[in-house]
Length: 184
Image (cartoon, rainbow, N blue to C red; front, side, top):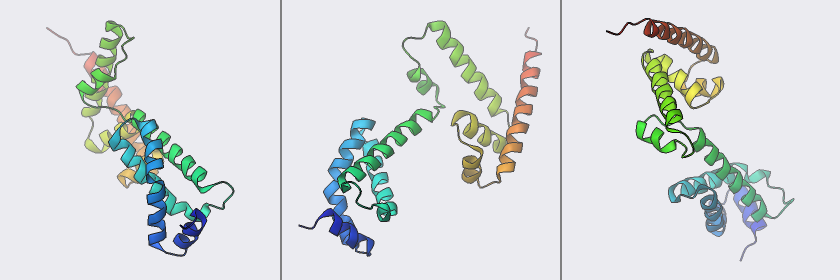
């Protein structure tokens, strides 16, 4: 049986079969780490795939300072934690999902206030033109940077800045108009 170091060198030399052997050798261990963090089969499968993609991209950076199994464990744990953080930042737009995400320690009043605030925010955003909605949702609800938004929407960073600025102005104006409405 070939050692990890032999398989790594063969994979670096372009032998795809050697890389496949590395995957088969470590697949269950990577999946176990991913599942331990994600606690979901599908998420663990996604994380495992991400780990091996990362491994393929950075295999040349492995210099043998530690065991290959240690290195791949670190990549696995890092990818799993990144994935979990990403899920935690992803907003839920559906009211059922918002209901599920509320803490059981919250009072009914604070839950109601939170729902009303979320509804008001989404109402304000829904009144924006679509290109402004996208930027606002990505920035405020998904906490993405200007650069990430620019790349995702294929626009310039300065365009992201100006759209956010204009969207804030539009939402302020809409809020003032809404507050001045009279109800009979």
